[in-house]
Length: 491
Length: 144
Image (cartoon, rainbow over all chains, first blue to last red; front, side, top):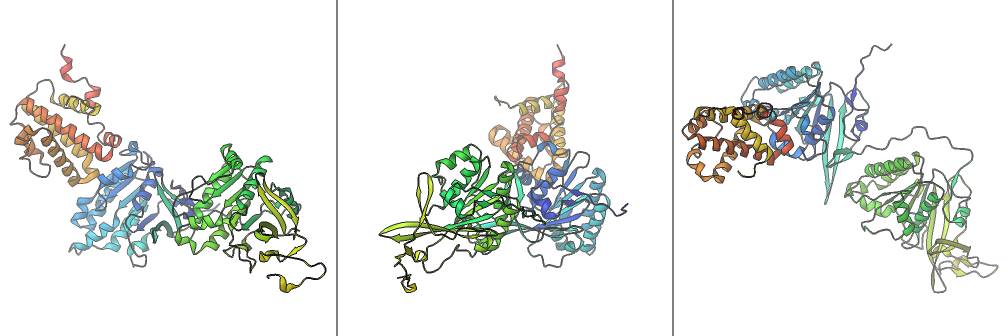
């Protein structure tokens, strides 16, 4: 039998935060919520408080020289989690302004302790702790000893079995601050501003005794409160490859043939081509074929135009609930937010097919601060989706440069399991389209460049142009039977 | 005060209840002051002494601008929330004027708080203050 202490982990009631914390909030811990003004500290505290407080184990919220309580109550009410009925029952606000103004830390501590002893709270909040510190410094009081005050407060709160949060405005985490040392947990909130875009980020700089998710995680504040976008958990062990690969039909029989029977299940496929080459149509056909076979799908569109869909069949599928639509026009998206939107739709619909249309729009939808890491973000998204067991089709706008054979503008071709490339060529004063399967991991596939056209029934794949060569250069020439002259290719 | 809200009606009834069956100026003043004290007790721990004093000043200001005849008397009230001084002003009034002032002040205060923190939280914080008027029948109505 283990004789080690078991630390309960409290569910914070903030979506995504428990994951980032590494399993919830350690009970009886002494924490600091820090960050610059307006970053959501008080809101985070309130959301956790309303989720965790009960009449038996209430929460005490000490207001000090920060936001006037009347205004705090006025604004916090705007959030869905605020419940007036809880006030004075499971949540008590206690105003310490006058005690703090006196500047005597011993007196402040005495007030806090006497209220804690009177109410036996499960949760204690002090907002804003920074003002306690400042007030104590402005007074010429030789007895004020901040490290000692913090140390005693931490000790007393834990002894009274209260999980405690000090809320404070701090701008640099490198300050040597006694609070940072004493605290069991340091939750740092930030706002990252780049040009006109603002992204909120949360970091658990410290949480004793548990494996937090390192790094900055984005969050949003909506009327429902704070929502943290934790990275999608990855299965450490990938499902063993099935001996017989199950293949998904693409909805274009000739393309299935080119793919050696269809797209292997769980693969990611990049469809790259120039504007107007029919990528979105192929993507819609892929979903429609799934629906025809009783599968559900999810499509993420990243277009700013609300009437993006020209495809009636796809609109019908979305209306029938066979395809879920992820159409976030929220500004400044982060990769984790998008992945979370996708995963929640996937699990809601038990979807097997996912379309992202297009990567170019996706890149634009991301906050500028994430664009530098686009390749890395994309890699994480592909991994998160394929490890959820779905097959993913992504479209990518490809500027036709006839001098080289590229598959994506992002250097991301290696990320996907399969690539289909589409191109325009000029033959007899007509703009024709060709496509080819460039890559299909661990599977035989066609090496043909096939003509295709787009009509009201979707993509119609034709034959190869046997008598032409130099197709990839965009201006093929007629092949002189027998001998071909490599010098003619790009003529 | 022709269109009284439900809360205002409760406040007026509660004040009448506190005054009791025999209304004299001392009882009226005492009823107003004791109601304000209860509000103080309910709100000061949460919003602080200064927060409450500010609400009180604003309520008084609104009362006077709505009913200019009150200004002669109540403009004299000093800043802060000095209930003893207020009481000494009230007892100099006629019964009817004092009662009218009490009703106007208390309902204005309640409505002011409502505009700031909403009806449900205001009701939550001041719950219990008006309850005697609900649980007991006001004394005046006991007489046949």
